[in-house]
Length: 112
Image 1: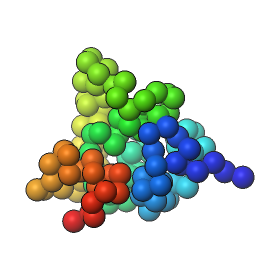
Image 2: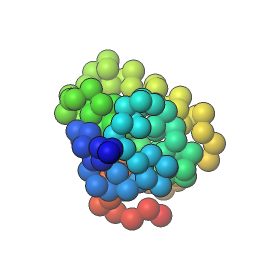
Image 3: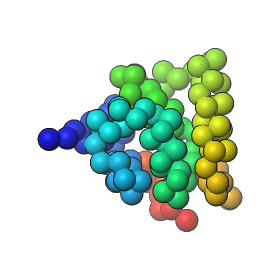
Image 4: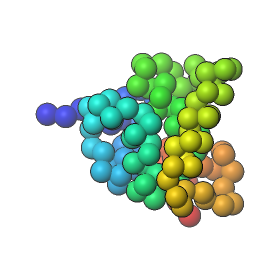
């Protein structure tokens, strides 16, 4: 029996559904592959990139609240995020603000 992706802190049903589109169906899968590989698969599935969603995932896997990410730690995660994005072609979504991308990540607005 597997544990739902939404059991990871900071991730909800909308994020779980998006990870399913990327072929990731359990919290165990994400924990085993780690945040960076899970996010790389997210982008490879054609899902839009956004930094807030990435660091929510990283913090959640550490059992931390999403807003714990600050200062130098946040800057280091931004570099990792940018490297992951650069490694996957076709991940830039034009015309989306960071806020819109975050709202789309959490399923509040539709993907364009």
